[in-house]
Amino acid sequence: MTLLNLRLAACGLAIAAAPMTAGQALAWGHTGHVSIGQVAADSLPSDLKGFLLTDKAETDISEWNAELDVSKTAGNIHDFERDPGHFVDISDDGTIAGVTSIANMPSSRRDFDTVLRTATPTQTQYGIGYLYYSLVDGWQQVRKDFAYIRAFSKGEKTAKSFADKAFFHTQLQLRKKLTLRDIGVWGHYVADASQPMHVSVHFNGWGNFPNPNNFTTAPIHAPFEGTYVKQFVTVQAIKKALPPYHDCQCAIEVREAQYLQATLAQIPMTYQLAVPSQNYTVSDAKAVKFVTARVAAGAAELRDQIIDAWNSSATWTVGFPLIKVADIESGAVQVTRNSFWSD
Image (tube, rainbow, N blue to C red; front, side, top):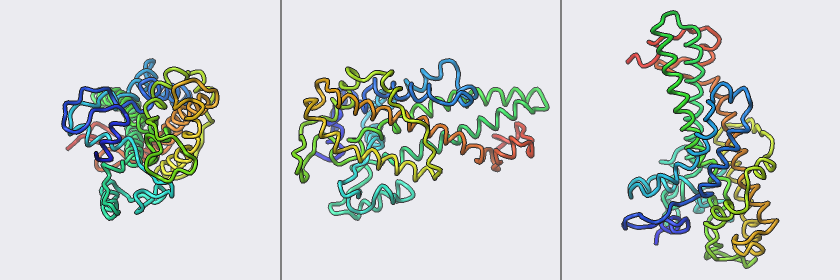
């Protein structure tokens, strides 16, 4: 069984070429993902919420946070290409397959895959997982969405003709809808990255590794992120555990690496608490508090990265040829319909 198939089995998915009729791979489960999206959206600053969100935006973001699990089993090619984006297997020594590290990631998935193929035994992004790239890719898309929202908003206010005003109004409404979906879907990966077993070689029991602490080898992945959250973690508790906004004042590539490293550091506690919780099947105060904190970490990171994407969008570009958003918002450039999609 390949490493990817082991991953799918850990999450409850049918594998190989057989028709995929088993349950979904529920990273955090539907309950956890919806809760993370809800808490993140609800905790955004009021000025950002007022600019971007509609009355039902919180619902949209929270439900779309689960979409990448809902869409699983759409087909073998669909799943084979997408499923490795939910995880990355980091070793106890901090390396990935012994050839790179999360703090020194190649600049693209292509280059990552090339490096992995030098490992012994040979690895690929499909076996090791490319969650880091899912995080960066999704954030960059949301930043671009925000840049267009800024540009279209200004264009609608300053349009000198009815046709231009109608154009910008339509584009703005469409972009806001798309942005909510982009945040929700990308947010799924942000949520996954707060689950320690999604960033470790110990992804479903300790596995065939040195085990001086005698950690369980039982399949604890699914109960940890699924039934345990549904039974014992509440939205109120997540909100209470939510840390304040953190601005790392760094590039998104650095922020995502730091986020994954912080989650990886929780692996020992994840396995220590498997004992009193009976492999995450019965309520234990310390285990419930820990799992709640991990869900809250995902919600906080999603909130923080949405804020960062919004702030960064003010310095980005839109249109073709590219126009600086700052020039549009300052009035230095007057945009019209022909500034966009003019071919």
